[in-house]
Image 1 (cartoon, one colour):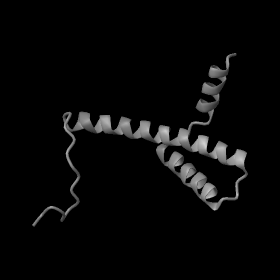
Image 2 (cartoon, rainbow, N blue to C red; image 1 turned 90 degrees about the horizontal axis):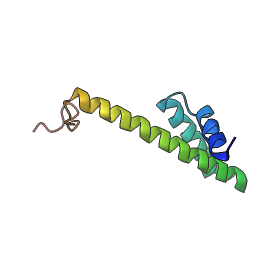
Image 3 (spheres, rainbow, N blue to C red; image 1 turned 90 degrees about the vertical axis):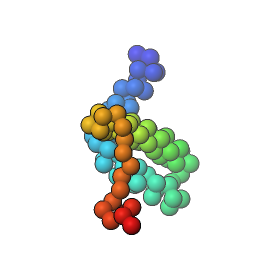
Image 4 (tube, rainbow, N blue to C red; image 1 turned 120 degrees about the horizontal axis):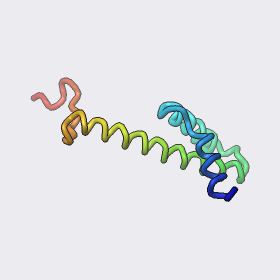
Length: 87
């Protein structure tokens, strides 16, 4: 088996179950890295995992955005919270 296939299989096995799970893991990694207590190799591994999580979250957000575009007829509308913009 090639290294690329092994890496892809490992990434798939470590893929978060949801956007929320990915964000929670990312927050945990950031806290660990900011604490400055990780050895160099662990910091590099944490950074790599964080990068994978960011890509996963970005892909999830793109999927949702495309679903919203379909629901809104290809035109995203700016979000206005109730009370904002009314003057």
